[in-house]
Image (cartoon, rainbow, N blue to C red; front, side, top):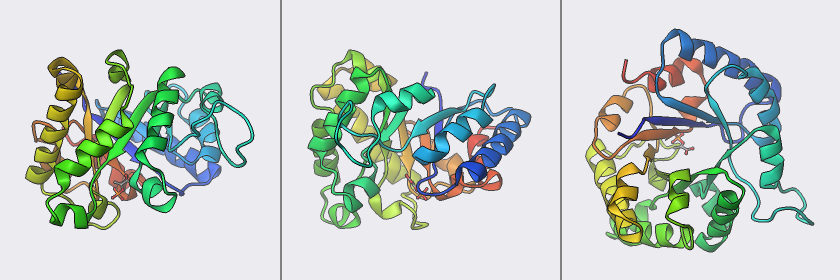
Length: 252
Ligand code: PEP
């Protein structure tokens, strides 16, 4: 049985002060509402310590939105996994489409980070997904296969229990357009079958696959009702309790 896993990617929003206040409010609201899904929030790096402090005593996981592919050294402006772990952060989002498109992250580069995160004992939320052009050209499966095999290269079967996949069609991120639950489910089914081929049917069966792309209070139930959709990676609607609470309590 795969436990629902809902994550909020704050992107470049929330100062430490605002993030801490929001996180406290969210933890209280989630507790009062009896939320029983796995919840994660990913603040910007500088906001992480304040959010960790604000979430003491709560089950909400604090993750990073990125990390460097080296352990330490002359990489100005970068953050190493050890620094995150020292703060108590054990989960990292890698391969987000905004990192791929704005910062030129390739599958090879993302793979180095995935391998380092695994070596450091961290959990990874690995984002994959196609652009509108690729979907319209019928390349969905080709794109997902290339991303999955590139990003997971040399990741062992044992390490796969530390990997969550987020299927995020690029055209649905921050646009208000959502994939239909049927389209999302069929992409998720493809990802699961591809992982079964790469690893085993057992690993594929246990793999948590989140959907991301304009998830909100109105579409979360229909998405989560689908067999292969195990959670959500939420951007815009994760930035207020009013919008995020109905998502993390979609099953109430
Ligand atoms: C995201 O940031 O991964 C995302 C899916 O954003 P949004 O929910 O705003 O589309």
